[in-house]
Image (tube, rainbow, N blue to C red; front, side):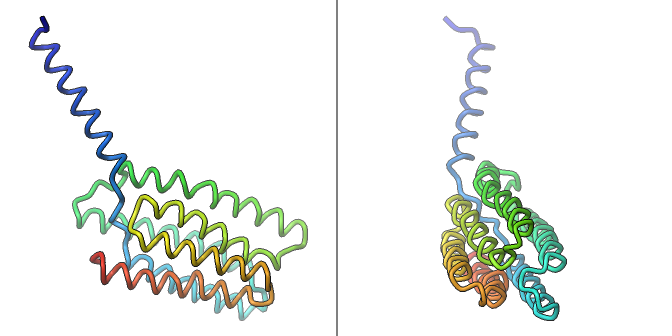
Length: 192
């Protein structure tokens, strides 16, 4: 026979287990469409600046643009999560971070290696493909549109690797155009 205290403890442990299970099975829907639109605008601005420097993969342009884009995406997602009264650091968002991180870190490491090897012409394709791989993986735990956006990024990356002369155009279409288009779609279909 169990004591009432033991029964309460068992009930608390069961509820905690149910909460963890529900959190890990959920999807993260607080992706900010407006944030993606802003990231797309930053991508177009970066492409314009890179065009003016005559270097498609000018690290002086793209590294700050990437850092600023991360900040914009994080802030806009936090705002949307607050509006939806959804937990920001939910199980689904943690999973998104975990599955995206290897692709993004690999992109950073390959950037260093390709620059050191004098193969900067491969950077646009590398960035697009690895970012796309990360977004596709993260999209499994979020709105379906992100998976499709990631797949399109991978496709643009493949094109940029096969035809490096179009790297800057594909960077603009990817980091600018795809973010704008999918951001607008998320605003329309998923409420901002």
